[in-house]
Amino acid sequence: MEKFVWDGTAWVDADTPPGPTLVIGTNPQFRFVVTNTGNVTLSPVTLTDSVYNALIGAQCTIPASLLAGASFTCTITTTWTQGQHTNTATATGTFIDGNGNTQTPSDTDLAHYFGGGGMIGDFIWWDVNGNGIQDPGEPGIPGVTVTLAGYPPVVTDANGYYSFANLPAGTYLPTIPATEFLPGGPLFGFALSPVFQGPNPAVDSNGVPGPGGSAQAPVTIGAGQTDTTIDFGFVKPTNYALAKSAVTVGPVTPGSAVQFKITIANTGQTWIDMLPVVDTFDTTYLAYVSASVAPFSVVGGTITWLDVTGAGQLAPGASIDVFVNFIAVADTTLLPNSKTVNIAVVPQQGTMVDPDGPTGGIPPAPSPVPDKTAEDGIQIINPTGVALARAGLTVTAEGVQVSWDTADESAILGFNILRGGQAVNAELILAATPGARLGAAYTFVHAAATDTQGYALEIVGLDGRTKVIELGQP
Image 1 (cartoon, helix red, strand yellow):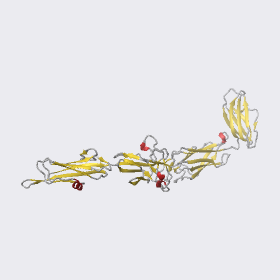
Image 2 (cartoon, helix red, strand yellow):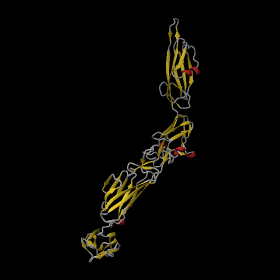
Image 3 (cartoon, one colour):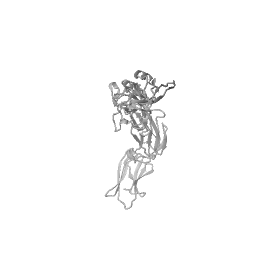
Image 4 (cartoon, one colour):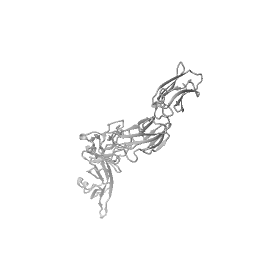
């Protein structure tokens, strides 16, 4: 006995799995060929099947007897089933000799096919950076309903995957209904990513706007074809603003308390799940004391917070303030704008954002926003010195010209130009506005010397104390 399966082009003796693949919409056909290989007539003859007995009886005529060397054929058509299919046929004949002895020879044969219709899918994801490509770390969106005409709707799993299986060849339109974008829906606030970005269709987005606010992605498959590149990417704006300001009004004197405020405002539509901040300052002029949010570390002039939100999240539209306290250390007169500047940074690395908040099912992902930077400064004035706006040396035809500008002469009597520790001016250069919080511009020319000693500006206070500012060599 031999049993065959029709694969669409030929009869296949599929004794071992999986056998031919038959797609949905194909009615499987089996052919049974029974041959009497003996030298006597068999009567009666039976043909049974482990699955299709009823169809054999309905669709085939089994002869009452089978002559030696003769054969008969039975062909049946059945209903397609999904997955691996196996059935076994058995043919039996009977021979009774003249003495009444009976023999019942039989033979069996297996047949297999695999019910594998076409499939489409398969990924709906949060396109964090909005580039239309499935980048590493961008999570799937769970709980999204997808419909397909003529088939039950499916819902994306915990990782954002969906599929429709056992499809015949044809054109399909998987659709995300408009209700998924309404408040309370898994895609509320999301917009479609740009489509067909990059050279790899396996990681791009196929979704386009559909009727009534839906999203859809047309696809055509052949018989038994699987296309798992029918993906939908969705974006949600992420952004935040960083501001840095000196709470303390300057100028201040060394030893004074100085406070800065760092403000981060969530100006996007996603939650900020992890919010690191790095604040840098110059230890020459400021000494760190404390902060309203305890930092992870303070190393030299760098203060680091891993997450200023604590265990919470910064919701869209919300903001957070971090106050940082210092002690003023040294005069900043010679710095640009006479201020020491603190710089705050919200780094992209380490910042995590969440599109649906603490109760949603989409996990946080790395922020797509580049580093944010903000700065402000504070002026520190030593009351026994001078607030210098500028000081420098210039070589002229007459000699070395020493120039300096003051911003505050409230504690100043005058100046000396030093070279090798000795004054090169014959008498004290008096301040233009001694005792006043006013500034002035000064120029002194010293005939060029043959040695390479540098210059310094000595500031003489009204109280008799002095301060020396090195100017270097011209």
